[in-house]
Image (cartoon, rainbow, N blue to C red; front, side, top):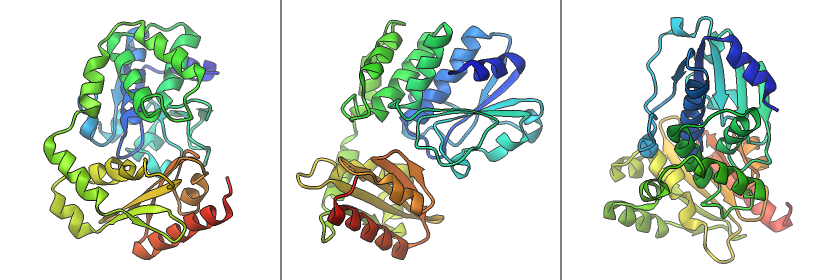
Length: 314
């Protein structure tokens, strides 16, 4: 499956790894994992990682990105990870590279690279990178294995989401065989400051419901500014406070920013990806996102989600 990408890696001395904007654990894990996998097995290569800051995933070793000039992309191979659409890529200078490749597990939206490997049967992009290492017989060092495991844990919801398969556990076991402490990972991922716990409680109190029992939270730009935390913490970080409400099968978190309203859509049963795509976004069947123009568009999206519940369509 990865023969053409391995061939490209062999051809280029300079490799630049991209992932999506506002990175989650899978984006960071796959980027750090692939970077260190290449460095471990092709020590003669120069490998960079680019993109916006790692945010709450800055605890992942080697997650600080590199500052590159436009000239650095000349004659380089750019590899894009965990990204379904060109508009979502962090650092669009991949277009300056000599050749491009993509590895992704999201529902296909558009072709964005010269060589592409996309497979939605994997719970995470980290799972795909682990499969690459296993299939090609490449050595994994502890930094790569730990980062990849982190991404698998976060994108599978600690192996609870229905994207988790027997293959997921086989690949996780392959990573664990390298030898690293999972305690560090879980401590960083799931231990919170009391201030964050209070913030999460305040968002629980903001939950509203549509006529068809779609749960949603809407946070204005003024409210965002008053919380004193980054947008990711509010948008991606708070969406799942609605995830365990009995009788709620679809939930969405709207967060106003200077560049539009971030919408994080989730479902335990239904395909919400088609709604995200309608509004210019993408992702997975049951976990997707989009950036909307304004509050009116957010309310229109809620009406579309209500229609799914009314029709009970998959």
